[in-house]
Length: 62
Image 1 (cartoon, rainbow, N blue to C red):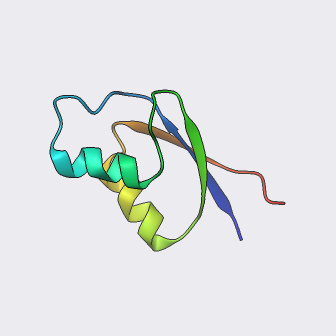
Image 2 (image 1 turned 45 degrees about the vertical axis):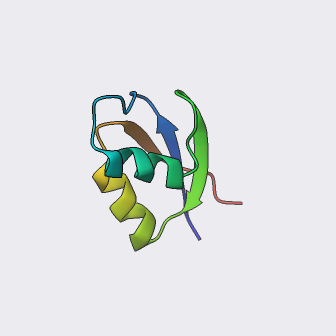
């Protein structure tokens, strides 16, 4: 299955708590940190919520 590489690019300071929680639930703790998740509707919805704070690319399929 395809994966998504999600990079935390902009601080969540000054944004709603729900967006901060979404960043945390994606596994992002520090700026410029990158995590990989499977491409599914749940993760896509979380990314849509914080799209202005993260950068998303297609990950390598192994």
